Image 1 (tube, one colour):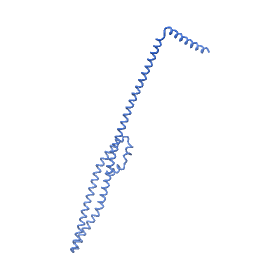
Image 2: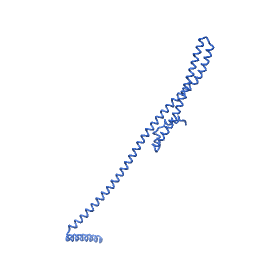
Image 3: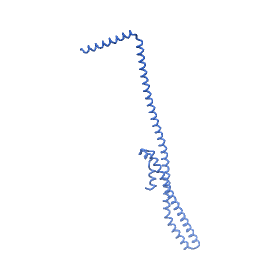
Image 4: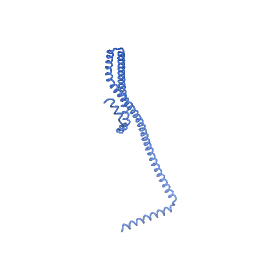
Length: 222
């Protein structure tokens, strides 16, 4: 594949489409940029050669046109001096040069068209390179933003885990405080009861137990 066909392929390719088909867009676009830069360097050499050929043909064509004009002037001069044979020879030389000009003109026109086309392709390729570099900058910015969001998410998760742990500690502290308060209440209740009150309390408890036991026996006898 020629460098100029490769230029056409790159110019016609969509950078976004290329990036959508790969897993690592940033790596892909770096590769695209390197390839474009290499192709541009080669394309510039090709364009320089094409322009040089065009200029060379143009100079050659201009030189022969001047020769043709010169022989035309000589033929007129000879004819003015009644030297018809000499004028005829001069015109014969002019005709020979005219045939060379007829062959050179299409070659020069083709070379001029080629150099113009290649210059346009080179300019388009340079524009695509600029586009790829802008795309790389955008991708790098998006990647940094994504990394920042990921880091922030991880930080928030860590912070939330810390909050969850703190919440558990708070619940444990509340439970311990509740147990301490209950223990203090029992101690206070026991301190408030006199030995006589404790005896009546124990009697009431025994009565409750006997009553519940009697109820169970009654249910079993049914």
